[in-house]
Image 1: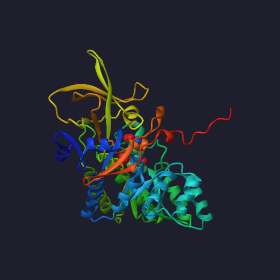
Image 2: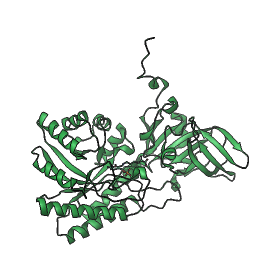
Image 3: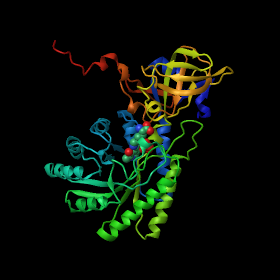
Image 4: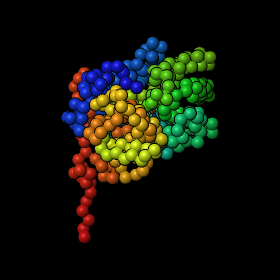
Length: 432
Ligand code: LLP
């Protein structure tokens, strides 16, 4: 899992800095991002499009991990972003992120969120349902504005992934259904609106996908749809947005292809299909979240207590857990870890890494072979950059960790550690 330059003197090194030095400076639990990994993955995605000479946007799915510094990096890399709430939009605005590179997603955008998006001239609104379509028309009238839109369709593709993170199958809360004609009806409505400019079609089939078949079927279905829209409605689609979902390696049991290779497969299918159907190849937008943020991040914890049940299990407990990474408890997700201050050791043992939360299910990693640890050792759980901090909670009234960005041997706080005072900031005393 670790690259050679990430281990020096038997210590874990991130972006040129020892994990133990980061811990000395910022404490634990700590979420650390290696910024060069974020940049490199965006660049790798871009290269595929450029090699294939297809217009594109790499629209990072903010939900994987968002903060002002992240949006700054994304802007510097000339990426687009997808946002799914007023909060993500607000964060992007605070970062000075270019609004014309923002796509607004969501299956229940509120009036206030749509007003905010239109006011700030978000580059693309991805329409999900008829209610929203009417609401957006109303907002555009009120603000005497226009908006670029895409229609999100559900293409009825079942990707092989956890049920909770599948989105493209027909029985889904997202998007206009193609099979029952809802997508056509939405097309007609948008074409009839003088304030909406329809740019294209969007679909997303799921997350942490390893097989390329789902993306191929999705691409074929989208090409069929745009052909049908052209033939029957005279509408030419400029952009197809195929969503995200490219799976990453969490443990040695995972063998995904490289994220950019998924994109190559999509482009190959697209080129073959558009040629076969004699239609112009549209621009392709992708929305990778996990593949950009996931491998770039890791979580540092300090080892505290232990409990050994002879012949059954040894638990070692760390100072974080399900509050900063809910994925093992929620999805049964697996992770790999190393002892950051002693990566290799002759003395190994099988342990289970438990969190500090009052819940038996608060286990970060069940059964992992690690160097024998003692209190004060630092454990790094790897590839936690996506859907870790972004899904963090204050369960048990634990403050959320700090987030640090590291690049070229320099570290900077990206998100401050929450304090106990932050935890009661919104509480109000009851008048007794
Ligand atoms: N685009 C759309 C419309 C999405 O709904 C998602 C993820 C993405 C892009 C980005 O997918 P990615 O490239 O990150 O796989 N909390 C879950 C993942 C939920 C994904 C939701 N949608 C987890 O921790 O695995």
